[in-house]
Image 1 (cartoon, rainbow, N blue to C red):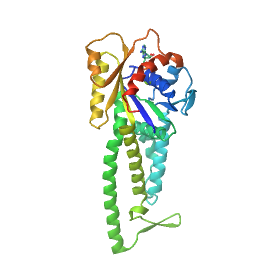
Image 2: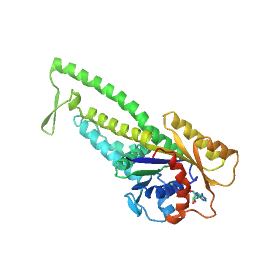
Image 3: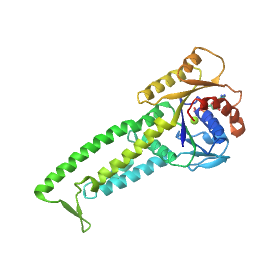
Image 4: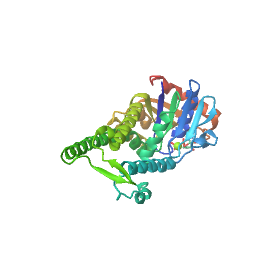
Length: 305
Ligand SMILES: Nc1ncnc2c1ncn2[C@@H]1O[C@H](COP(=O)(O)OP(=O)(O)O)[C@@H](O)[C@H]1O
Ligand SMILES: [Mg+2]
């Protein structure tokens, strides 16, 4: 059974440091994959090893990857455009190539490709997955995307059904409509099972349900925050935004803890909290991170392993 740990929080609070440490401690229990999905990667720096967009074993049972989100965007767009061309091969006027370049800048593409990356990671064979996410705003969008996308997909499926039903009505009156492409006669689909658009929508739906299920049932969301006001405010906003989608943040890491104050109290009210002290030196390297990993073990206990 796969279990995921998703690290969220403001930039610079210590997401990478803490997720790298937790992954080390999980690797003692089972095959673990840690993935950086933050386009500004620093996972390799924190471990002190060179990483790439393929998982490499950096310690016994511990695999690490820095997902190349730019490459994912390019691959995603290429695949999507290819599929649209295939589906609408009978529309000679459709010139998609012109749009490919501008599509990469369209809103939502970054979130979508990070989610694609996440879907690929879930399908890999590991007992534990640790996700080092981009800063809060983008992460909240990525994590809630399966919910919003499913609403859209279902609406589009209804609409497509309507179109197909009208096509069938027309067929009854005027017969089957065909077009000739490259000398081949192609029938315009009017039945759900022959329709490539419907097939694509169903496939997308299945994929989104899979990630949504994984995030909601198999993942622990962990907020990393520093005991300072801005980090607390951003953390609180993220926790509440995710709550609207029934995604609950269960673990709180108060990182760079120095002494108790009102902020730490407030943070501790957000979930099961642990404190990681402020170290004199940047915690890094497998040995250096182990002591943080030990502190974080407390966090795993309440996480329904
Ligand atoms: N407990 C700690 N004590 C001292 N420095 C820390 C601690 N945790 C993180 N840091 C330092 O803070 C900086 C940001 O940490 P990082 O893990 O890269 O944050 P994020 O991934 O959230 O942007 C790094 O220089 C890191 O070494
Ligand atoms: Mg980071």
